[in-house]
Length: 254
Image (cartoon, rainbow, N blue to C red; front, side, top):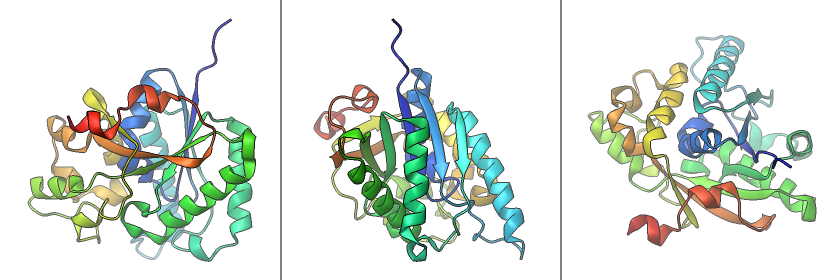
């Protein structure tokens, strides 16, 4: 009897988080036959929007779908929680949505932000907290949970390649990325699929046109190939697809 394809559910705060944080892992998993479903709790409407937040949210939702296709994901789900307000919303409402997504897609692995929120973004930190709470409450029925963070210094290298341009518009300190991240338990390298990760990031044109990523060539995508993951203390144990495609930190740095 054929073995069902593993399912990976990525839960993030905004369209573009998925590509920037873990596009390499997602592309590799999809290429190996995994079913990848991506979720953004907001539509990202709070960014610079020329007074039309709804239009920006619609545009970013479309960019999210395009990035998901580029990575090989089967679905991109953009929810309607208020961008920039996640720490102040009813946590029970967020938890209900996350539980429903897990119940619908029955993932083997859930990926979300680590406790540093990539660079201490409040929305990101809230998503980390809510996903952790939901997985904890599921007990023995929970999927495996992995937290993603960015390797310290990686975004500095991207910014330097672009002559000092911001990696994320408005965030001027490239060293904020990964600076406070806990040590990873797994390192995943996108390898030749790093170019696909870069292409997915560029799908989010409303956010990254004019950023440091616009200056990278496909050959230079190797700068963003490596991603850090930490296995949560909650959730299912046992080997997962991420363990198959990743390496322990010591081996990755050897």
